[in-house]
Image (cartoon, rainbow over all chains, first blue to last red; front, side):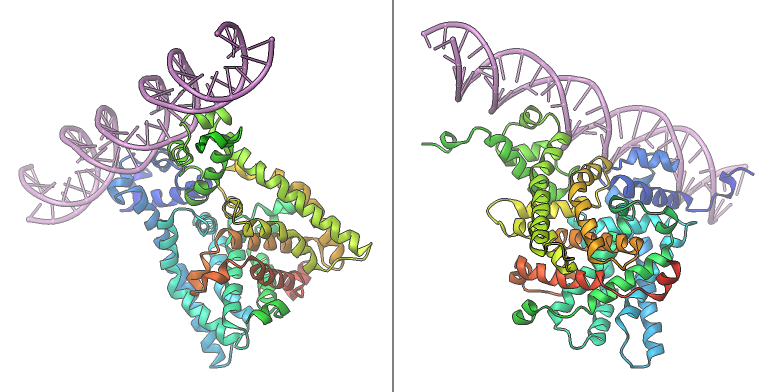
Length: 225
Length: 225
DNA sequence: CTACTATTCAAACGTTCGTTTGAATTATTT
DNA sequence: AAATAATTCAAACGAACGTTTGAATAGTAG
């Protein structure tokens, strides 16, 4: 029985998507050629255009494949939390944990190429190409709305504008942390086993972000409000 | 007197660098062609290779032009602060302010193209191309070392490893905030005048980051230490 | 003015890009 | 087994890429 014999129906699509995640993460969208991509995936050069239509459509399919379930999981975590609380307001730290846990689960799943995608996603937040950023924003919107409302209920005394900024800071830290886990080495050599312990990283992040969210308002900001 | 008559000696170099900052920020390094760049700058296609040698050398010159003085200013702010304190430990918030103030001054300086560079810099932290990341890391290293030591003195009771991570989070938030100030609109429509008030943004950031740095250690992390 | 250097210019270099094509092959259906 | 649809393949397409070239121009020094 050859490898080919057990090849599932749409393995070509899947192989392209998996390799694309890895290469786009390593070299960026424009830095990854179709020739490199298809040869790494072991498929014909024309396969991407046949199965997806174009390079940009491949990028779109790549994000949809992971982001749709990831954001559904985020909303699911929030539903679970709110059911448990039965009307009581959530603690900010619990909201943060609920939000980042799907990412962390994806990072931990070494079998699938989830880690590649999570790092790619972090990079794409600051992607220059507007089409890609717009797609991400659109795919994120439903989960974003739910969490924004939840944070507003959790922190009822914080001025709305300040809260918006703090949520923005929070997403920034999350995106950067996932995208650039290797950059931490620039600050200090740190044990690689720690770097890859997603649960410990999630705890560090949650502690940092929850404190930031709850920070006292500076006098300058109070005056501006 | 034509415009050309008052053209300084090396205006071509400067014009190329200024336009490159803007276009690289908008379209990325690979997404910006030499033909677009030189035509926008009003110089000949061959000018970049004549004055800089290659596209990559232009990128390097671009970062050196801004990063060297910016990091010198960062170290200067730290020197000033430590002189004032005369041996007493600094407050984390003051260290944060000292670190981000040169960025903010650059953002506020609308005359020069500093804002373009600051946003480009934020993007480049997560730039796939390793050569560029390595250059940034190298140019940052001296200021980074000084600030890391200062934070260690300011927070003597925090485990080193936890502190390294929190500094990492801090740089992430800073980079993302500078790179993606428009992304905050995805969370909530916010007044553009606010978005561009660098001083208010700096205060918001400082409050958020100082609280995050000082966050209590979670029980999970204490056990790991 | 002359000789020399520095810069600008239009044109072309070879390479690589994303995409298309039409035939060959494989899979599915009748 | 024949017919039809789906997929793969090698080859080529035109366009755009970064870079190079050698002549033309501008600026400077003797």
